[in-house]
Amino acid sequence: MHRTDAVLTQDWVKEFLARPLLARLGTADPKRNQPHVTPVWFEWDGGCLYISAFISTRKAREVVANPRISVLIDVDKPTQAVLLEGEAEVLTDPAEVAPRALSIYSRYVGQEDVKGDPYQAWVHDPENRIIRLRPNRAFAWRW
Image (cartoon, rainbow, N blue to C red):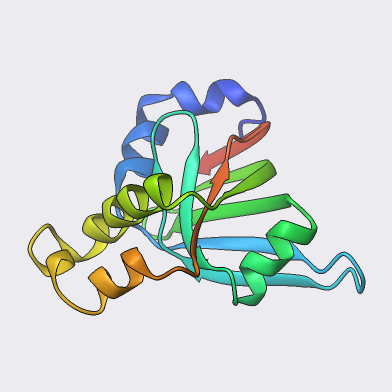
């Protein structure tokens, strides 16, 4: 296991984060301290991780109330994982949200399918937000 932010500059980590894998977003309710883990689609730009989330969901509400999050992206065969931690911010400006959401959805469904429903409805939904994490801690491992 590597325990430095330098992990993000390793070639295998960059290639791994470029893949459209399922991530797990970990949040916590600040009143009950109850952890909550949700599968999410993401996009990594080399410095920040982006997740689209509707503000009415528990995960988005918890990020607003407690911005400290963890995101784990992992696969098996071979086992590889990247864990990112830090304080997230929630982007609300439609001029930022819509293009980033479109980019995230395109990674998973392709350039053509994202032009149809339900993706276009999601992109332009007034409840859609972008969770942006600029990680202050990163860990990675593989075997």
